[in-house]
Structure formats: structure tokens, C-alpha cells
Length: 422
Ligand code: PLP
Image (cartoon, rainbow, N blue to C red):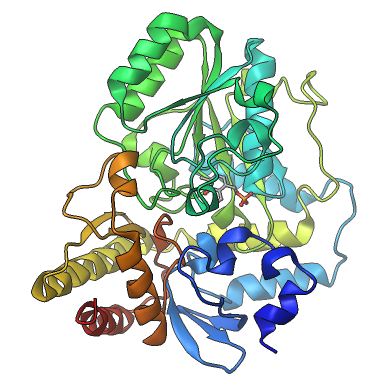
């Protein structure tokens, strides 16, 4: 019996998060036993060059010795106390230093908790109920946000999940990502009813789609005019596209920021923070309730702190950006030689591959028009060659600091072989 059929006896669909089940590409998922640097290894110790990086957190590469040591040392002191610890302050201080828009920050245990709590806070702060999100952006699986969402919800064609009350969904207004005129129209009609805009400043859950010039600036302007709270969901982009996230890259100051993934260095951590006057509305300072038994868990904080410290290495982001450019250019060149229509987007160590003539891909409808069947064949061909890509045409890929030029060359060589079979 395969590990997957064994898992499926006890776990719904054999997985604890839907996209892992390979439904977006067909076949059975690879079970991972261990990982080191740029590679993950299956139960037979077959290695794969990994471009998923646990869906974003592993920017240093897997099992970085400094992070592992920090976790081991911290774990030996006890796993959880449910009382404040010094290391929580150290992580919070570092986040506030790296992202100056964050004046106060609250730790949680996942990106979903971060966005869910930020939305509640924005509603509590403004006294308004309606929220704005963008089609194809995924902000975790809480009720108000699971409307026309990206990621697994796209793969499964279930934009709005059963179980989300329609009264909740009715409070969520969904607009087209990168459509500036539509945002302006909505806010001129009913801006004073809107509690917040939540946006992925670079969309990473409908593959990788950067903002068009003026899009984020427009969001900032309409929020300033209407009193709505601007929330940048930087769960994926935070510490990823630049040390200070997309807000540093594009020089836009959101009111609130949600974080996850890298902030926990591979442990279950999320965070939300921002303007002091808004964050002071959170309990125990204010009336908006939010809590967590394991929030700020010391072992998770140790992984996060060690990871954040290592981002300060000289040329850290420049090197990842250069390797990503090398990969994208190599793949495009190989696709061209093979007569395959391939379009790519990338921002620093975050990238998207699209089987389409459209270049660049900027809108949700363009993402959805890509050749998913060709992606599936590409995915399996690459897996067979020892390259592990995200098992869905709608997910961004990630490089880590551990990916070497030789890894990139091996990936391009594999793609050449696979393109010839498409
Ligand atoms: N927000 C964004 C932008 C994400 O990419 C994700 C997860 O991929 C989330 C929120 C939810 O985070 P988590 O899976 O940790 O709940």
C-alpha cells in the first residue's frame, strides 16, 4: 500500500492542506522524509531541487544549521508557558525595525489567523462591515475571506466554499486585481461603507502577478479619502521580495500588515501589526478581542528570530534575485527553442510560469486562460527529472539562498528535456 493510500484511510484526502494532494496536477503526492539546503528528499531518499520551500517560509534553504540549533536550544527550555517571554519582544522589535509601518505587532500561529484578526480589527476600528478583496488573492480560509479566493480554491474551482454563510460573503466585495478604475468607481460610490481593503501587494495565489504601476498607490489614495484601513497581506511577500516586503519595494505605507511564512522560519507563526492607533484597539488595550494559547510560542519565536537575523547578510536579496532571473531567462530561452509559449513573472525570489502567449500576465482572467493541461505535463516531467515545482498552475514558486547556479542550470537542463515532450 502506498503512503498516500495509507494516509487516506485516516486523513481526509490523505493530506492536511488540500493543494498537497496533487489534485491540480493528477497522480499521487510525493511524501517527504527530510530536507537540506535547496533539496527535499522522499522516503526512498531520492532528492529533488525544491521550488516550493514549504510554500514560502524556507528562504534560507531547508534545515539551516543556525535555525535548527536555535530551535533545539529553545525547545530544551520548555515548549510553551502561556505567559510572556523575552523572545516575543525580540521578534516584535525586529519586525517593527524591518517594517516601519508596523508600530505594534501581535503574534499568532498562522497566516489565516493574522488576516482574520486584521479584518476584525479594521471592522472594529472603523465601525463598518464591508471589506474589499481581489479575485484570485488568497488570504487564508476564514469565512469573510474565502470568497473568490485563489490558491487551492482556484484549483478546485470552489471560489466560495460551502459552509460560508451567504450573509458573511455578502459583506465581502470582490474586485479585479490591477483594475484601478474599478477601485476608484467603488470608492466614489460607497467608500464610506468600507472597513478595509485587503490585498496581496504582489499576488502569489493566482501564480505570481505583480501590481501594475499605480494600482497600490490608488488603494492607498482611496483609503486615505474614505477612512478605510489599507491592509497589505504580506504573508507571502514579507521578508521575501525585499527585507522590508512589498511595502518597501513599492514604497507604500499600509495601515496594517499581515505576516506569516518566513516570520516563523518554518514553524507555525503569523503576525499582524501596523498603526499604533489601530493596534491599540486590540484586547487587552481595546475592545476588539483576539487571543491564542500558542501565540508567540517560544520555540516558534526562536526559529523566526534566527531566520530574521540571517536576512541581514550582505547581498542576501540581490543574490536570490540574480538566481531567479537566471532561472526565468533560462526557462524562457529553452521554451522558445522548443516552440513552447511560456510567459514568466518574477519579483526577487518569487516567480510564476504561465503557458500562454500573453506577456506579461497582469490580470486574473489572463491567468485563468493559461494552458493548465500543458502545465500538468510539465509538472510531472520535471518531477521525474528531480525538480519539485508547486503542484498547481495557480501557485507562485520560490527560490532560497541555498539554490546555487548549478541548481539553476540543472533545472533549465531538465526543462529543456521536458519541453521537448510537450
Ligand atoms: N495570505 C497569503 C497571501 C497567503 O499566501 C497565505 C497562505 O498561503 C495565507 C494568507 C494563509 O496563511 P496560512 O496558510 O499560514 O494560514
